[in-house]
Image (cartoon, rainbow, N blue to C red; front, side):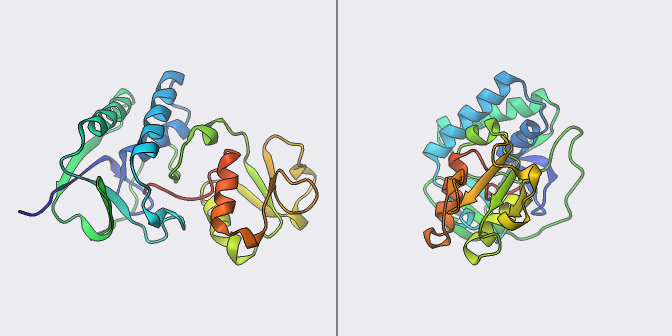
Length: 235
């Protein structure tokens, strides 16, 4: 008997050409400012729970450049299913259509752990119109709490064009951050502004980082300051 997989998703397609997963669908509402404070807190609690209990597929490390999507392996543990049900309730409250789909062949498998598989879908289609009031944007693995609280929208980076930073810079820009090099920064990018984060090894940066430390160290350092530097769950 072939193994069955299940995916809970919205009915609109995102940038990867497939229907967005439930985590991303709720995060689109959060980004649009449509969630109440109670709903936001519940979403962050659930996201933190999965961050602690569900392994992070390796394809997220470079921003999911392969365009993989994840499916739960069945049977889904009861506690995980309960958390997903709570997310579905948030979508219901905002009139966002969603569905539960099953397949024994969801795509070409590129990742597997005890709870989920990551696959390359057999088919991708053009992104579909999103529900009114929804902000379509990528999300990262890791906790969303710091990102939700952060005011940073501009990142000033010493080594803007270096190979070690290029993937992170691309991820930041896809997330909607403005990224500039230190030499290109102007008065509006003053380090004292709460919406600007300075990264490098120069004079008193907000985040101290050098290319020798590698991409992962930069991603982690930015995340610690509430800056979402890489793509994560497929949208």
